[in-house]
Image (cartoon, rainbow, N blue to C red):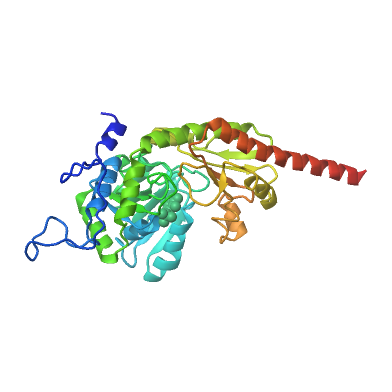
Length: 396
Ligand SMILES: *Cc1c(COP(=O)(O)O)cnc(C)c1O
């Protein structure tokens, strides 16, 4: 059976009524027959049938034993960190999602959990940095916004040798393209806000565990801390995920075409997309992913904040907004948006140059998207050549 068929038929038909859509159980509590005697549900923070259906679907999709759905991707990340205790160390990818960096640095550091950031694209860096206190290795692959790729299978082996858990933030690839648990990861987290939801209409997060035992520990944390996903948002994620394979395949196809176009444009300097042969980790991406998803970053030959601003304000179909993974194409300028709070030298050292632009390639026609980017870049090239002419005149 193909993965798409398996996914679509993992969405249960309601046993009570035959409803083909999972019902939204909008309730806080469940009536009990006698104290402690119930139908598997007692209080809706602990469990809810709509949320449980979503959790089962995503657990199967990722090849894990259990999943827990949270109110946001960050709440999901937070639940994983709560597996640790004071004195434990996290070894994390250096190009980590900014919100995860903020959570680790500004919340967990004061509880005695430390984080060591390394360039995990080189496996040797992980071997060098791991210590007896390392209890969690944190990967994102591909990363945001420079699309770095780390070798999940190789790093899973190192984690196992040292008794550390490996958690992979699989938001960018989605389980349609990459299944970290099958490559040896213990935990997978998602911002379901992105490809799983897929329609830019909700905030949600998921943790998937490789084993029942680890899944039960996350479930305990979910119930104890309370950052659950609502029944209605659980239903929206289920509805989004029904078309995951279809959407991600098309996002990937469109993005490959846009990335190849960008390579040819005279105003563009570097293009970061794992599907390009020029990407430094293309081979690893091709080994562990079945496609390259819809996120592309690129920077301009004129590497200034102003030049990037010219481009991002001139597109019609690519809307200027944070977030990614929806049906509508989005673009953002990390230096003045998502990475604004990072000092410019640190930001540039991490590869986020002044003109870096990140695209979330949507499901519009690829030709229309390319024309849209082309006209924005062409105008920039026009601006540049006019500047050159003006300078020439001044020199005369
Ligand atoms: C958006 C995002 C998050 C955070 O998820 P929210 O749903 O916004 O809380 C975490 N990791 C990655 C890679 C993301 O893109």
